Image (cartoon, rainbow, N blue to C red; front, side, top):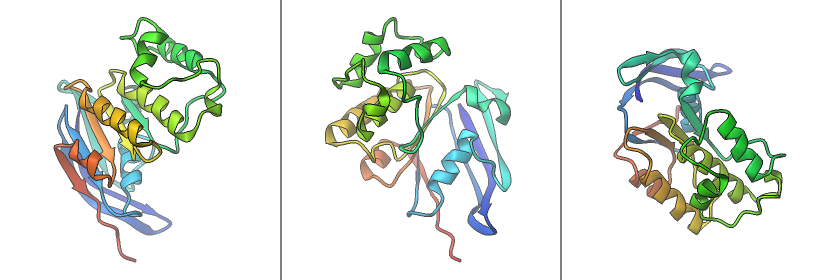
Length: 206
């Protein structure tokens, strides 16, 4: 998916988070959004996901030359952050089955085929709410990065993972399909190194 961000500005309670941002993210990019804490990295990636509206400016999305409306972007994007959740009352088998019923994870013939790629010993009968924060993050990343939606947005994806979990994440990002666009909001040097382009969001002074 190609993205064209045009003169984007976001304000909260009359405080400007960022203003007049313009940049492009070509299809198949591995793109990093960097900047100090409070500069608006998470806000920007939420706007790209369609979850937040900008105060000014717009984003143009296109897939294989065809425009996608902002109202329809949710059909094409996965967004993963430590603060978002899956349905935690389900166990992992149920969660996998739900995603397949929603038309996701279609490349996997069975739960075992998918869960083996998470490279972690999960108890499939335990509800997700009983997992640690790192385990939950690995599940969310596995649901997104192992699917084929054309736009994957990650907000500080490694922040709750241990060393082994981060190594797994980096391998997974490295093997995402070449035509899938991956955008990562991060200040982690290892995550930035995975990307071929980046933008730094400057914290606005008040």
